[in-house]
Amino acid sequence: MDPTFLLRGLIIGFTVAAAVGPISILVLRRTLAHGQVYGLASGTGVALADASYGGIAAFGLTAITAVLVGARQGLALVGGLFLVWLAIRTMLARPATEEAAVRDRPGLFGAFVSIYGLTMTNPMTILSFAGIFAALGLAGRSAGEAALLTLGVFLGSAAWWVGLTFAVSRLRSRLTATVLLWVNRISGAVLLVFGLAAIWLAFTGA
Image (cartoon, rainbow, N blue to C red; front, side, top):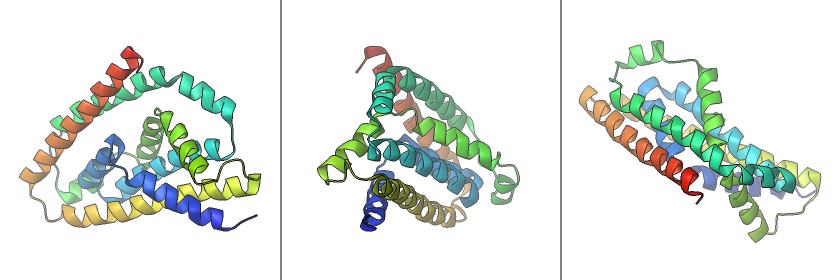
């Protein structure tokens, strides 16, 4: 078993996590609204979802891949509706003080589960990992190497979210209530666009 597969998975996980999308916007906004711990709980949910899809691709579970890709329209609709709901809540949210944001933040487990589920509504991620693994010659390896790849993907993705939430949480104390209000409005608008796009793609079958 080649131990470098752990490092390769870590690099891949970090790179995939760094891609900007609705999940990134959501984690950033949660960190600004409720602090680093809440943002990190959300980021860990993303990392586990990346590892779940990465593991399916790494172990060559083509049957599961086919089922999830076949259900992509339904999953896109669910994810899109959830994003629209989050977008509306975000745009209407009023920024709290740093102390109140930490005191009144929702449960950490809820943050973890909700964003894990949202990330898993995009089964095309499996194809992304499968394509990356195939291009780098990582596909069709032993169970041990596939496990190292999967663990590496989780650790790499988690490392990205640790660094990002730390940096954003340090920035929060320097932002005024007015700036945070506009952060809510802008991030909510971006999430709304992503959500409506997902719903559109679900109905058009794209």
